[in-house]
Image (tube, rainbow over all chains, first blue to last red; front, side):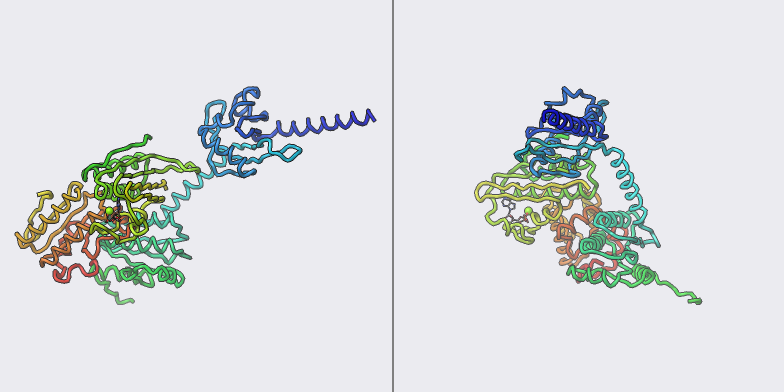
Length: 274
Length: 133
Length: 125
Ligand SMILES: Nc1ncnc2c1ncn2[C@@H]1O[C@H](COP(=O)(O)OP(=O)(O)O)[C@@H](O)[C@H]1O
Ligand SMILES: [Mg+2]
């Protein structure tokens, strides 16, 4: 009996060593902290990243290793509130041993004793600086594409054209609006053409932006012609119930340009070939 | 950046306040349209303080939300007569001064967050926030 | 005069260079109307290129001034509205009403010629 019992204990110890070694070997930082967000335990990666010894880490406030301690504290409290957080939306930055700021993601959950009582929180803290850089790069490129895809062209003296291609979200609609108004002023154009033939779908918000754009352009002293309105876009625009009476709409871009020149009292003389 | 505060005592202060908020918004790199929205909102709110409460003050403070987005929070408050019916005051066209009644409802359209608190007899506080895009 | 008013030919050119308090704005409105009456101007141009903020009060003064001028039998065009000011005014739900606008002085003068004084601006054209 005695012998068997000892081996169970040994087995348990073996198991403990094994799980502990996994934790220590983790490439992510792992930390447990209590309700006062004082650190109870850390793994080797945490020691390496922060450059602070295990002895000093344990018992110290979790928040003190972040650039913004208040947000870190908030995050810690949120774990106890929600019992489990995944990819917390709070942006956290760890201060590493070199004093660099490392953006991190936090996954954490509370853990309980045998009686089911919450005794602390277990957090996995992942260095996301590479991922963040990649995202920023994509965003930067998107910004560039955005600018490229909303050019404002001066098609004739007094006529500026903005062709919209692709999906327009609110951000882009806003950018288009500001671009167009800027260009109206800088080119002293009296007519602006917004060609939306290349826009697959338009939601209410975007339609609203277009109407605001046209109204603002009118206030500057320019007229707006919208061309290439698809049936579904037309429906969205009427459903808005906004004052569309001042919007001139033309089916095709060429009809729009003709209208623009008409407004400027310039007639397009059709050549013999056409 | 630090919070700024100024008293609104005269009509001239309405102009100074909107210049101050534009400067702050520009320093925080808000874009030109948003700078203008903020300056216009401040113009409306501080005018109301001078017009209906004789005086008031304005506080401008850079803030961050939980997603660390930067914003500018502005509080305009006064110890004037207050507004008995806020819903009515927020209605486009409602005015007790033969004005346009576009100040409060217009301001709400310009900003991301708008909060108005008022008790009859003890003043009005309007808080607005604009987040950076 | 709170804002200098230039008479060029048969027209008055008024360029608001500094921000106006409400009281100054009312004075501006009064002085413009007096000047239109005194000079029997054909039309006026109000240039607001320098105004970086036009709130609901100033917008009202501007549109009222233009309408009053038209009631007096002259024509009025507002020029030089900045894009960001236009966006802000539209978003607030208050534009400049039916007042005629143009991008710059030159286009404003051309518009004055084309306008029908009695009917005013019509549809912003
Ligand atoms: N600070 C204030 N104190 C008391 N009353 C106010 C205040 N601000 C606004 N009001 C009331 O709300 C109404 C609407 O205000 P507003 O939308 O700015 O339009 P307007 O100033 O043109 O009347 C005012 O006419 C006034 O009765
Ligand atoms: Mg007001």
